[in-house]
Length: 233
Image (cartoon, rainbow, N blue to C red; front, side):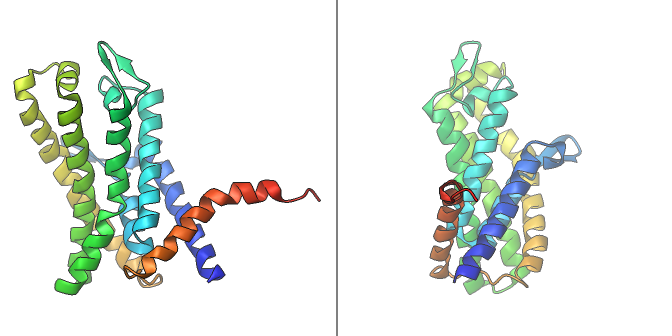
């Protein structure tokens, strides 16, 4: 059991490092003609499928925190929807900014696991199951983020983008179509390709076994405390 927990900690740390690398370097974005697709959420999706929903939720929270940091230290005109610390013009971020920044990203680490587990019982084709799970995880992020912006910051977001409020819904749907759909397709392809390799060496968790990941996540937070308690030699 201890060996398994150690292995999960190493895997969790690896996925965290990849998320941070993608979030703060240009390699987290891939040009797709007229738009750029982000792949920062892909390690969260893969981690969810391979390590389970608890580890996935933890990785999603890491993704959310990197977004918060990025929008706080390098803000754009719409960064107030992701950071409560940003005020641009007459628009200010607040607690709802944290909701938009964190909740969708955490769910990106939960949804793919359950979609994959459910599809395995119905379609029973790993390539198809993994692709759909990857698409579902990506669209969870896009739809919840853009939906949250529309519901919580509609007027302020429209003003920041210099568009009429009545046109906002169309703009939101345009972002989902132009950015969200290519990102989802890319996430599905990458999730399928990477997970098919990883699952040869890492047995995917059943819904019962997924609870074990909670210990690994908790241990990740406890490691600094344990190190501090070690007596000096």
